[in-house]
Amino acid sequence: MGIYKSLRKKVTDKTAVITVVGLGYVGLPMAIAFAKKGYKVNGFDTSTKRIDNLHKGISYINDVSSGEIREVVKSGRFHVSGEETILSGSDVLIICVPTPLRKTKVPNISYVVQASRTVARYLRRGQMIILESTTYPGTTRDVILTILRKTGLALDKDFFLSFSPERIDPGNPDYDFTNIPKVLGSFTEDGRKLGKELYSKVIKTVVDVSSPEVAEVTKLLENTFRIVNIGLINEFSHLCHKLGIDVWEVIEAAKTKPFGFMPFYPGPGIGGHCIPKDPVYLSWKARKVGFETRLIDIAAEVNRNVPTHMVERIITILGKYGKKVHGSKVLILGVTYKKDVNDLRESPALDIIKLLAKKGADISYHDPYIPYLDIGGIRSESIVLSKKTLRTFDIAVITADHSSLNYKEIVDCSNLIFDTRNILTKLNLTGKKTVRL
Image (cartoon, rainbow, N blue to C red; front, side, top):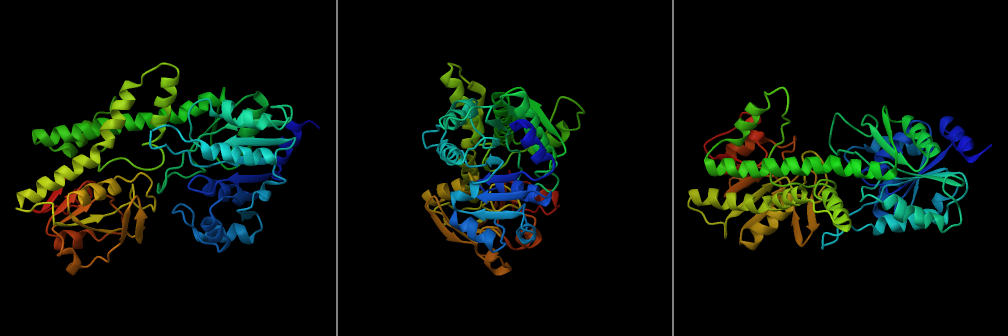
């Protein structure tokens, strides 16, 4: 039996051993999903803290409960380790490692390279390798395939290689790994068929495309669409403020049009793993082929400057009440990049804190998901909210609209509130001393 038929049979009858390399926001939910479907799943991560938590049955990601982890560990279908030998005996290896940007805004694929070299040490005939880490077009072909070929094994003859971009949306109650359509690009028809067969076991819809490059750029287009439109509405929001027009009312009116308009909403800035970073990967690759992505670059610049605009608004609001930002007590409500997640990656709240600190503000924060901060030079502990403590601050700034916050108490007891998320209007809790973006 050839390697295609042999591996396909293992995938179909669920005897294939799947190893997920990288157990973060993408890798862990995927590993749990495959284990729940009856596959034996191994998880490899270099973070000792993550591995220790998983051995204890403790989740560190909102979208995966501790109960789910304990269930699949107890069943014997999920094993984790910080030792790379756990890759031995794998039939499918899925790479889900970070792809950050360097300080110079140049792609950093060192984690992908490291993971690929680790996989290469355990590569054998009859395996399928899939990269899920978001990256620039050509990474799968030029980087991973090159590393794997150094083993002496041949693509399609000895192993299969594909790219399938992650589409995880942390904290989204409606969409998870299993019901978000999956895009898959492979080098050969057999590779596409195998990848589609695998993902179809846990995902309702799998969309196969003609090459890894198409799949790589698909992910970048999705997030470029978002960064451009978010940049547009953020700039539009600043304009409306200058014109004395309520941007939220404008959006509500515009979205009554049944075609040709999709609502995007302004906020304190963009955050998370994808939107601030992915379009920069595309811009970098574009420059390599002599193309200038002017619209993308402008949108990225607009969004990078939003936290500065937020601080300017805070200074103006305080000034209307006869207060200077220097020495004012400022309470930041929510430091994660979006509501109801424990994810600090690229959070605009952190930039706002740093900018306010430089101007001499006395800053505290409250976030039910982040008990303490030790990041980017910020060291602080989440305060306990009470009527008494709320009254001690000159202004409270809502930067993440977590569902668990008692907004009525916040409105009743705060001296002044700047709502960058429009949550108070949604809850009909606006007052004389509430200002919305």
